[in-house]
Image 1: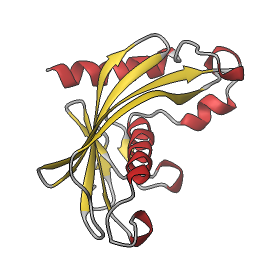
Image 2: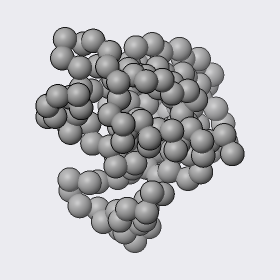
Image 3: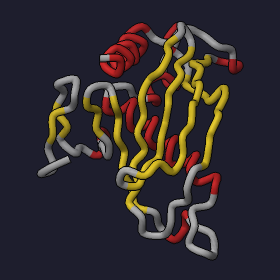
Image 4: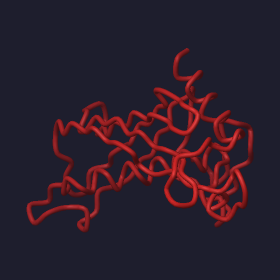
Length: 168
């Protein structure tokens, strides 16, 4: 973001409002979320602990949804067919190289597949042009009791837009 105000890819204003705070951006179907590695993210040797890559990816997925106008709290507070939330159904990750204390890394997320109740998101963590991790995360939209249900139509349309933009 530049200057505290930026236009989102979908044309919505991004004004830094506390309820709509963004850290990432979407360009041509690719979401980028950058962060610095802090001491709390590392082991005693200054290397990022393996489970923290999952935290970084979770934050990036949440921010990707926000950038596209999807607030997960809406699903949790909804009633009827729109009530639910996204959960990780499966995760495959390859660790290529370690990140270290004070590195600036970027989580690069793209939508690879879309189902009625699920979405496959590829997430790569890079340092400059160096690949650190490569993951495929399948998220499912679930309702009460943890049962899969169709994603809200408006949300699915936004994922479809990301999927199509990423294929161009």
